[in-house]
Amino acid sequence: MLAWVAVAASAAAIDTLLVRAEYHHRPLSVALFVESVLLWLVFTLIGALPSVLFERTVLRRRGLSSASIVRLFAWTVLPVVLHSCLDSYTSLGGNTSALRDWRPWVQSAGAVLALAAGAALVTRIVRRWSVERLSIVAVAAACACGLAISFHSDETPDELRASDAARPNVLCLVWDTTRAESLSLYGHPRATTPNLDQLAASAVTFTHARSASVYTLTSHLSMLTGVFPSHHGARMTRQRFHPLETPTIVRALREAGYRTGGFVGTDVLRAQSGISFAFETYDDRVDPWVTYTHAWALVHDLQSLAAGWLPALRQNGLPHWIQDFQRPAREVLDSAQRWIENGDPRPWFCFVNLYDVHWPYLPEPSAREKWVEPYDGIVDGYSLRGDRVATQKYQPQARDQQHLRELYEAELFELDSAVDRFLGAVDLQRTAVVLTSDHGEAFGEGGQYEHGNILECQTRVPLLVRPPGGVAPRRIDAPVSGVDVAPTLLALAGLAPASRMSGTSLLGELDPARAVLVEDRDHPDPRKIKLALYEGGWKLVREGLGTEQTWRLYDTSIDRVEEHDMAAARPEVLQRMRERLEALRGTWNASDERDMAKGEVGNTDALKALGYAEGVSESHERP
Image 1 (spheres, rainbow, N blue to C red):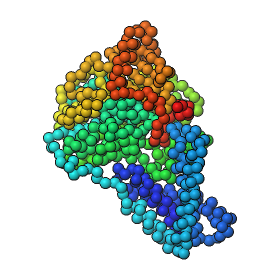
Image 2: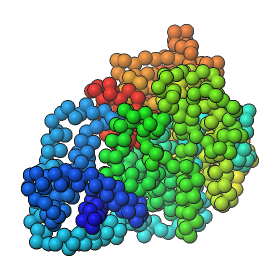
Image 3: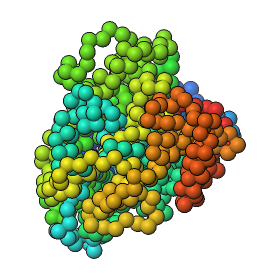
């Protein structure tokens, strides 16, 4: 038994070190190593069978020796090593077309040979050791590595610790997936957000705010950089951006004496995308520690594969009962509050993403009882991805869509309460608040669900600005955009925006004739990429790239679900807006060719689990 523990602890220590190296921005946690050991014990038990068979049939040996322990370790880690090699060649949605090439298999064969050679070398070193001695040494070394080594450090240079006490704190709250029309603040007949209504009584409310994108990562990056997605470069099939080429506002705030903290509720905003750059603290752990290990990656894929055969494992579109790539607002806000109250005298910039109203729509019983009317249909909070709906290929009707909206509104009500509790602990006399969303959500409008398109319900978002101490309430109808968030946050801190920014500070005069752009570039299939330009009541839509482009024109004042294309009837408006769109994107040399190029997807498991995997197989075969 001690030998098995030694093998599991050794594998867990290596896995722990790899996780810490990748997630170096996170502080040390004993839970990572402990949970890893428990998972690796399972792998050790599984690896014992081929190990014993190999010992008895190939080596003709029985009994336990130091050499057999080393070989048990090799058999235990072999499937995880092979999975890690092959998994790097799969892409969004589980596309395995790259495995038809010879490279992944040569790499896997090389990994097997390296593992065998390493086991042989270690065997020569320890072959004279007793089983007990080897086990004790292995457990001690594993515990030392797993529990005592951390790559996390305070990255704040000493010269940045000086603070200007006169500067206000700045808080940016992003209610992920919140559509403006579902808020009582924006005219919804039910009081879905009473606390937000009270906050607006001392703030400026923007009634025509548009998200820069309809995908979480790209939209958040636009809010932090002040530029559009085709400028900062991130997209669903390239979940990376270069913070030195297109800096976020976080560095400027740090240089001005701010301490900076980011707290997010979704794995889509993981630090590896580059979004965490210049944050002193970036809290992006949304699932248990063990789910970040290489061992768990194999468990995840095996369970996802098995779900295709066993309905009981499908979890209504979610891959696991342990891992769902998101965490509730109360956990995110509690973490942010602890950071705010940590005693650091510097003014702070706190960036918070709250993911609660994103799919699936699963309000707590108390909110459900208040907001959701009796319903006996088959559609539940998992929407079209629910097992019953997907199995029957059922198309929701009006009552089903209303049920989804009620579930969503119940979650909004809960989120409103959680944010109010959090703001109650913040000194709002010294803190500026910007509250907005990264995109909206559809519940059957125009035949659309969730946020894979650019209908009004998917692009119109809430946006409030409250300076420290509050102001007389105002509602501003001028068109504004998610790219305006970055220069506004800087202005609230008394800083000037960077010249590269496409956005403008919302504290100054706004142009009522401004054209606002939305870039929906986050589709694996380039044929589904859309751009939208809003000008007055007109909306120009460009779909596709290159020679496959199509253009449509809508009057949003009377056609919110884009049923009537006015391009043929109003060619002069179409031409004017086409020229304006191309001129606007030309200011930062937006590249359609770059949009068509393959990228590095990165966090494929989270994307698939959260519903961003449509059209994958065909798109990754395209050049």
